Amino acid sequence: MITTKYQIRYKEQTDSQKENEEKVEPQDIERLERIVKNEIGKYTKLLQVMPNKIRIKDIKYAWGSCSSNRNITINQKLAKKQEKIIEYVVLHEMCHLKYMNHSKDFWDLVEKYMPDYKKYRTLLKKC
Image 1 (tube, rainbow, N blue to C red):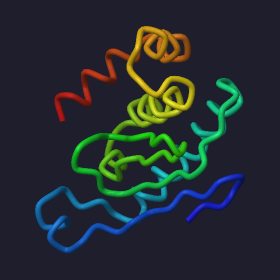
Image 2 (cartoon, rainbow, N blue to C red; image 1 turned 90 degrees about the horizontal axis):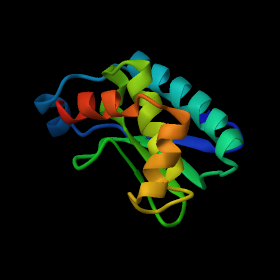
Image 3 (cartoon, one colour; image 1 turned 180 degrees about the horizontal axis):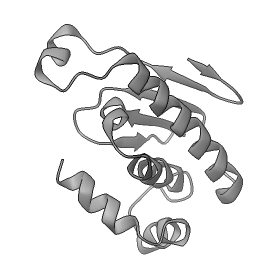
Image 4 (cartoon, helix red, strand yellow; image 1 turned 60 degrees about the vertical axis):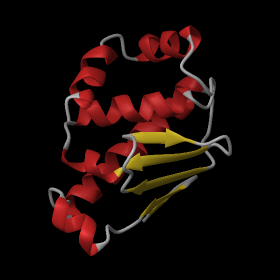
């Protein structure tokens, strides 16, 4: 667990989850935590927003999520993905702290900070 201005919490996969998916090693999670921490710090300054909590755990339905309570969850399966994809997911969720929807304003904000975001979005949709 990383402690800074916020905590990143990691939730272990259950045995049945581990059997059915590519194994995520502890060093993969450490890498993911490091990247997430860096990207959250960067986008906190750029967007002038701060999440309440950040968690890394297994999510079945998405690569990331942002709750109305300003809690961001990042899917641990991103640990095996390239850094730019992780950055896109973090940026996407951080932009939800400004716009809790997928409006034109939301996508314009994502594009402002990552003009080629569509490339990474497409790559994730193929996974």
